[in-house]
Image 1 (tube, rainbow, N blue to C red):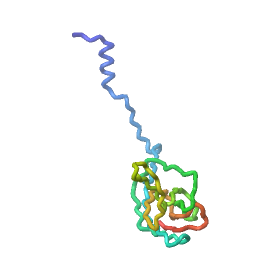
Image 2: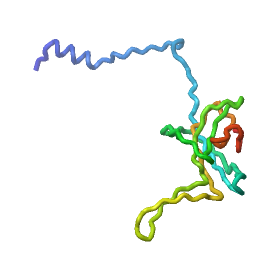
Image 3: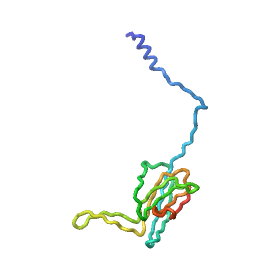
Image 4: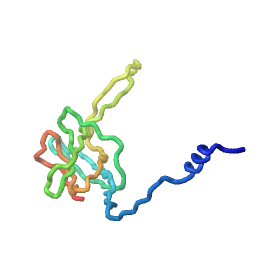
Length: 158
């Protein structure tokens, strides 16, 4: 069988590589990529009286990775709600996360007639876990009440 010259030419051209290799070291840029980090903070919150609330850092864990979704920012602030701030060396706020009042728990229950009900229970103590993408410039994590941003409850140095 005899192949037409055009088909033979296309067959030969298709088998050759058209990739050009250029190795110019002056055009290559080396960039250092900073690894993403997540910080996990666990706090114990105890309420002694109506005015005295004690916050204790249980532990902090810093690990590689990043959070999948950006958390929603709450629009309404209620008494007892917290804000967790990431701050740089000059105490400038880098990032923050809003935390609803951890001492108030909403519980759903079934009453004797079978109807669902909801009740808010005020706790004397609880533990909370906070996780955030850790900014490389972060030097402090500060826990504050949202209605009193001048007074920090607990400041942790990284």
